[in-house]
Structure formats: structure tokens, C-alpha cells
Length: 271
Image 1: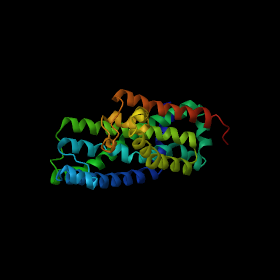
Image 2: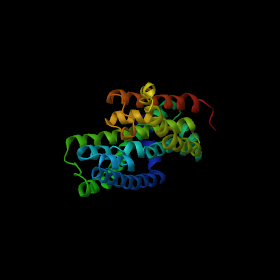
Image 3: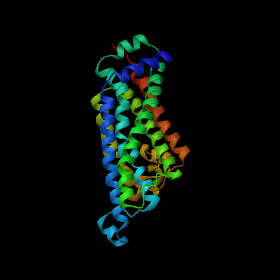
Image 4: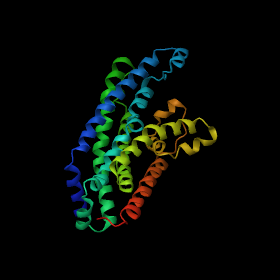
């Protein structure tokens, strides 16, 4: 197992795409953090009627800071999913899966090794992503709002959980990549689901009382449950699972896709 993990580390570090995507993710979240912090700070200066007519959320104080820092996962999770998927899809794109299986023929061990490496790199990705949001948002909140609240223990707890959630997204990305294998198809599916399908589904299901419970089990909603707050709450969805239940739901998604990779993809003859 340790040899397989070392091999996966070397392969992952030998590619440039992961850190290019990581830098793009950081810049993207710096921008979004600044924009959302400005939006919250600007909205706090308006009356309730003016904010409602302009479509600007009204939040202030620590609530505005917490909500801004919580956007890392709901708006940036496409990046760790794609980065994680590269651990598997690169193998099939560059036809290195055959020599990989010759070195480590135990396919269950191979899947587990990739998941472990993804978890470790996922922490790094989570730190980078969360730092991007904080770097972009905190100066705006400090200058235009009621403060950045980086001295608050609750805010730092949220930041810590944000890192954990982004690491879980990276691990889920590996499992998805292992099931789909085709790199282009995996990226298209990930982008389509994260940018269109799930956001629309969460807002639509959250608007129907009878279906709010269903929306809580979507991957993004489960991630928000781990965070303990929902950026989508400002758009009508407020029904979240408990933190431990949200974590179990995310782990269940990882397990389902990882088992699919092991017993569907890697069960076929590869040559």
C-alpha cells in the first residue's frame, strides 16, 4: 500500500495541470470573495426596500463575514473535483494505466492509494482555495463593512471546515474520474453538474416545502452542512443536515463512485 501511495504521489507531482488549476482557482476565489464582500457591505448601507428591489442581500457584521468566507465550496468546488479527477483520467488519456497495473495489479489497492493521495493534496487545495476567498474578502469587509472578523473563533472554525470540505471534493473527484475515465467527458460532466444542474436543483427544490428535504442530500448541500452554513441560504434554501450527517452523505457519494471505479472500470480488461 505504501509503495502504491508513493507512486501516486510521484505521478501527481509530475503533472503541471493540477497547480495551474490551483492557481486559477485561487485567483477566481479572490475575485469572488471581493465581489461578494462588496455586495454584502453595500447592501448593509441600504434600506430593506432598496436592497430587495436591487436584489442585494442585506447582511452585516459577523454574519456577512461568515457568509462570504463560506462561498469557497459552493462556488469553487468545481476545481477540486477536476483536479482530483486528473489522478485517474490522466492515466487513461496518456495510456499509463497499463504499466500502473503491472506495477500494482491489486486494483483495490490502486483505488485506495489514489483516494489517500487525493485526500492529502486535497488539504493543500483546500488551504489554497479558502485562502483565496479570505484574501479577496477580508480587506473589503474591513474597509467597507463592519470588519473582517478574522479574530473570531467561529470564523476560524468555518475556515477550517472549508479546508476539510474542499479536501473531500478532491477525493470525490478521483472517484468520479475513476468511473468515467475519459478526461474530456469527466470535465464536461463535472462542469455541467456543478455550474448548472446542482445550483438550479438546489434553488428549485428549496423553493418547494415538500422537496426541501431532498435538496439537503445533494452533494453541495451536504458540503454546506459540513461547513455549518449555506451560501444558498440567501436564495431561499435553508434546510441543512447536521454536520456529521452531511459528512456521511459526502462519504457515501465518494464510496459509490469509488466502488463504481473499482468494479466497473477496473474490472474490464485494460490493455
